[in-house]
Each structure stands twice: as structure tokens, then as C-alpha cells.
Amino acid sequence: MSKSNTQTAVDELRSLIFSGELPADSNHLEGELAERLNMSRTPVREATLILAAQGLLEVRPRKGVRICAISTKDMHEIYEVLSELECLSVVNAAQAGYGQNDLQVLNACIDDMVSALALDDREGWARADEAFHAELIDLGGNTRVKAIAQTFNDQVRRARNLTLYMRPLPTKSNDDHRQVYDAILAGDEARARAVHQAHRLSSRTLLTNLLEQNGLRRI
Amino acid sequence: MSKSNTQTAVDELRSLIFSGELPADSNHLEGELAERLNMSRTPVREATLILAAQGLLEVRPRKGVRICAISTKDMHEIYEVLSELECLSVVNAAQAGYGQNDLQVLNACIDDMVSALALDDREGWARADEAFHAELIDLGGNTRVKAIAQTFNDQVRRARNLTLYMRPLPTKSNDDHRQVYDAILAGDEARARAVHQAHRLSSRTLLTNLLEQNGLRRI
DNA sequence: AGCTTGCATAACGTATGCATTAAGACGCGA
DNA sequence: TCGCGTCTTAATGCATACGTTATGCAAGCT
Image (cartoon, rainbow over all chains, first blue to last red; front, side):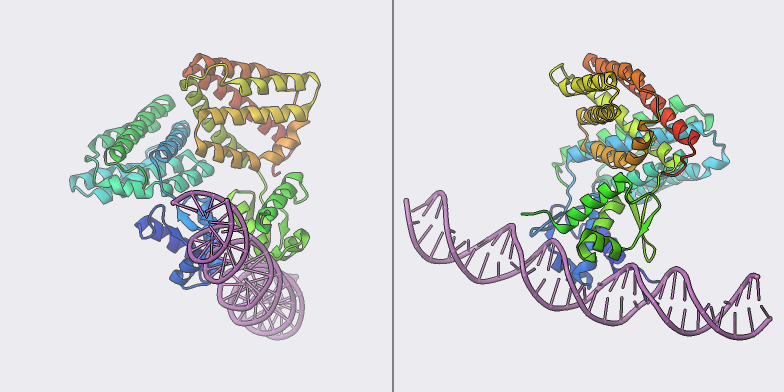
């Protein structure tokens, strides 16, 4: 059972968006996209509906679908939600009474970040960082939180890629991550929340400042 | 410019779902729905994609679209997210420094709840309660939070309607609401969060217990 | 010039038809 | 009876066609 054309279109459009081949704020007619993807308008249309629901593009009749740009306000909103939901997950994780075995993945993510930093491998660090945050949410155990986080992470993916080489080396993050790990292991939900909240807040301000300073108001 | 058939289909399917005419866990072929709505399969198909993205139904090829049932676990997850995001909104609202004028709508909602309760008008109370919570989120000012809250409220709408006449008269709620109002007006974000969190927790336990006690595991 | 009106164009919304293929029925053998 | 392979059926995924209608432009009017 091969992948449906609609699913193919979703996947390809997503990767075109993330790679920047379909830049933010650009407009594209259904027909053009269909030709580009080598299929008829129908599956492309369905794909655009799905991606619109995920906030990656907007369907604007007769103007073509527009790739959503992320403004600093959007970044603020998204990070606010992600922070809050991650904090929730962290608290839940702390309450769950996980032991070292349960936290192996989390631990591995931290190790990966440390070694990536040692090698000055920013992309490796970014991958591990995303995995770390995803694992936090997994440990929280709320599938809806997970779905929201994935959607929102996709929405800010371009911005994050952009700033990856602009930001200072995120050495401070490692301490934060380790502290969250410890708090979860200790079952100390208050500390887990506090530590993680602070971590999210500082990385949010870092990122938004970076964007502001470089005049990147829409990405 | 009249409403598109796709939009009509979305609206009608939503109301069929909320009213229970399309019961939870029931399955429906595209063709049947199309006939029922008096249009071709295409707009119905698009509508199901949209509603699937909103979590109201699942598209299961060759089995028909299935109306999503809400389990107690789902209720737990959804309420957890709604609570957390409402708390965030309440904190933001408290930080925003709103005055009495800005909180008129909120105040009116509380009044409506009080008078509805006096008349034993449960549906009126439910409307005012939903408006109250929606207004809290509006005051928080995060549009993504608003979107998520709407989606999730839709998902639990049937469950809430069901329990509306099973639960005790929610007189306690009024105090809670008034306290949140006061905390926002006072700009006391910590108290706002604490009060609201407690309120959400107690209504969550009330609801889930009600469902459990009545053996309503899937709604 | 600025504004309005009418028209040509083309993008979209929707219906329809068809090839594909999954699901269930049926029959057969163990 | 149960399991397994085959076949039938029909729902779907998709391409396509077409009517509708928004949009941009040009011509005419003020």
C-alpha cells in the first residue's frame, strides 16, 4: 500500500516550506503546485487544507496559498504556549516517579548536546535539543500536548534554523537541562517547573532578541 | 458571495456531531454523508479533512469516517491542557494591568451565571460559564491559546452537555470566578493562577467522577 | 487625472467517472 | 470446525471537465 498522493503532497510541501524553497509570504496557485509535484489539483488541494490546519500556510482563494510567515509576535505566542505545556509535562514527569531507567533517553539527549557542543556541531546540538524537549513532553504523557508541540515546533522551524548560527554557543543550556533532569528524578515538581520555566524564558528572549536585532520581523 | 459547499458541510457536520445525530464511534461513508448533505463527495471529503484536523472525527479509508468518542483519558488530557492554558491566560491578564472597564465582559459573564443559577437555568449557566472562560482567554491575548481552547472545547462539548443535568448546581463556581476576577483586577498574577488552577482542578475532578460513576467511558 | 463600468481571463469550487484496492464473502481443504 | 486463499464488491483516491466568479485591465466618463 503505497503512500497516497495527498500524503506525498503534504510531505513534499512541508519539506519545501522548511527548506525555504517556498519562502515565507510567497503565494502559489494550486495549479502551479500540482504541476510542480506532478499530480492533479485534487490531492494538492487536500494537502493544502491539511497544512493550513497545521498553520503552515493559508488558503486564499484566487491569490494562491500563502506560506505563513512568522512574526516576532507569533514567536512570542508560540514560545509562550510551548513553555507552558512543557512545564506541565515536566511537572507531570516529576510526579510520575520515574527512575533512572525511565530517564535514559533524556539523559542520552543531554550527553548528545554536550558532545555536539564540544565538536562545535551546531546542527547536532539542535537535533539533540529538539529531541530533549520532545522527550520531556513524552515523559509528561499527554498525547494532546505532544501534538500541539509538534505543530508549533514546525511553525517556528525556519526561524530556529535561521538563528542557529547567529546565536552564541548554548553552553548555558546544558546546566539547565541537567537541572531539569535532576528535578524530575527527585520527583520535585515545583523545582522542575521553576527551573524549566526559567530555561524556556531565557531561550525565548535570546531568540526574539536575535531576530529583532537582525531586523528579521517576518521569517 | 455565498458560503462554499465545503464550509456548509463543515458547519452541518459539526452540528450533527454536537447534537448527537452522528453519535460517537459511529461510522459514515463519504457517499452517505454527501447524499445526506445534498452535495457531491468532493466538498464532503474536504470537510472531513478539516474536521479531522480539529479532532472531531477520524478518516479511516474504507471504513468511513468515524466520529471521535471521548474517553475519560481524553477528558483528562484535554482538561489538563485547557487548565494550563487558561492559567497562562489568567496570569497574562493579571500582568496586563486591566481596569474595571476592561473587565466588563468578564463581570457580565459572572452576573449571568449568578442569575442563571437563581433561575435554575442550567443551559443559561453553561453558556455564561463558557463565555467566562473564553473571555479569560481573550484577556490573555494569545491567539494560539484561543484557537487551541476552541478546538478542545468542541471536542468535549458532548460530554459537557451530558453532565450538565447530572452535576450538582455549580454554586461554588461563582465564588471561584469572582476570586479570579478580583485577582486579575488587582494584578496579582500568583493568586490569579493559584485560584484558577484550583477551580479548574475541582471542576475537572467533578466531571470525570460524574462520568466514571455513570459508566460513561466513551461519549 | 481620477473614478467608474464592463469585460476577458483564469483560478477556483464542485461534480463526475474511472482505476485501484482493501475488506469481507465464499469455498475448499485439513 | 477452523484456517487459508480467492474472488466480488464497493469505497476510495485521483484525474478531469465545467460552470461560476473574482480580479485586473481597458475604455469611457467626470
